[in-house]
Length: 500
Image (cartoon, rainbow, N blue to C red; front, side, top):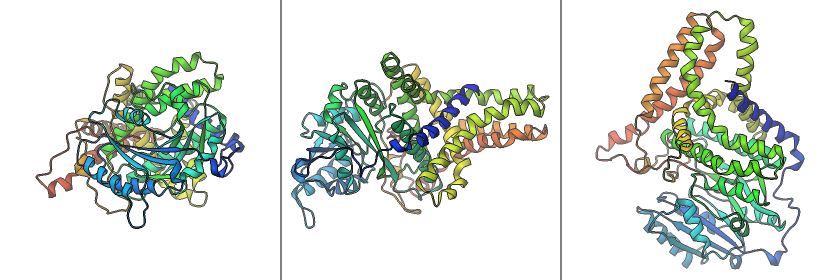
C-alpha cells in the first residue's frame, strides 16, 4: 500500500504540474513561428492497417479531405492485412487515386507487405523508404482526422528544434455503452493531465502512436522505428528527446477515434500498453538516468515507465487483504485514521480526483455528470485490469516476447448499432473465470468486514468486488447472443487484442 501510495501521490503531482504551468500550454492558433504561405513543407500521411475492413474507407475518405496543398502532400496506406482487407483497401485506394464525382484524384498509394516483420513499426519504417515528406503524420485505422488537422499542426514545426507534435484523442462512440463511457474518462485523464502536465512542465512525454506528426529527421537521428518493444511509439519518443529534440502537445487540436466496444478487447489493449511500457522502461530508463537531463525529468520518466508495476502489487494486496483484516481485527479507529486513511487518500482517492479534474477541464459546464462513473473508473481501471496487466508486466520483466496486436474496429458510434464483433473477437481463455473467483473472495471479505463492524473498509472492498465481477462477467457474456443466433459462427482464433 505504501508503494501504491507513492504512485497515487504522483497523480496529484501531475495535476499540480498541469495547473502550475498553465501559461506554458501550446495552442494551435499561436505557433511561435509560421511557414510562409508558399513555403509549406511536404507532408506524408502514413496509415498503418492490419485487417481493418470495416473502417478503412472511413479513414481514407477523411485523410483525402484534409486541407493541405496537393502538390505538397501524399498518403501511404501501409497494409499488412491477411484477410479480405487487402482487396477492400486496394480498391478504395485506386478509386481515390483516379478521382470521382466530388473528389479530385488524390496522391495516395497502396503498399502491401507479405510478412509482418516488425509489425506496425516495421510497416512505418518500410513506408519511410519511399516517403517524400519532410514531415510524417500517422493515423491508425480507427481515427477520423478533421479537415483542418494538418494546418493546425504544421506551423509548430517552423521552430527547428520541434521534433514531434501530438494532438488529443476524442471519442466517436463515447455514448455507445457504459463501458465506452468509462474508457473515455480513462483516456481523457491521460490526454489532459498526463500529457498536459508533462508537456507544460517541459519534461519527457510520448507520442501515442497515432494522431501526431513527426519531423522525418527526428526519426532518423533517434535511431528509427524499432520493434523490440510493444510500444514502439514510446520507445522512439524517449530516444528522440534524449538526443535533444523537443516535443509539443496541442490539447486544443482534437482527433476523433473509435473506442473498443468489448471488454476482452479493452483488457488486451491495456495489457499491451502495460507490457510495452515495462519493456521500454527496461530498455530506456538506464539511458535516461545516465543522461544530462534534469533530475525532475528523470523522476517523471521513472514514474511514467514503471507505473504498471502497481498491478502485481495489487495482486499481492488482494491476497493479503483478508488475512490482514483478521490479524488486525483488534485495531481501533485511531490506528485506522493514522495508517489506513492516509494510505487510502494517497492510493485510491487520487484516482477519482485525477479523472474528475480532467473532466472539469474538458467539460466545464457538464463535468459533474461524469461523477456517476467515478466508482466504475476506479473499479475497472484500478482493479478489473489487475489479472491481465499483471500477466503482461511479469512477461515484460522476464523477457517473454509476444506479437504486436492491433485493435479490432467495427465503425460503430451509436447505442444499439450492431457490429461485426464476431469477425475479430478474441478468445476468452481462463482469465474471466479467475476474475469471477477473486470477486467471490472479495465478496466474502465484505461480509467479514460487516460482521466484525469494520465498516470503514467496506467501500474499498466493494470496489474490488465490482471491478473483478464486472470485467469477468462482461468478458464471459459479450458475444454470447450473437453466437447463439448463428451457431455456425466460430470464435476467431487469432490473437487480435486492442492497441493504440
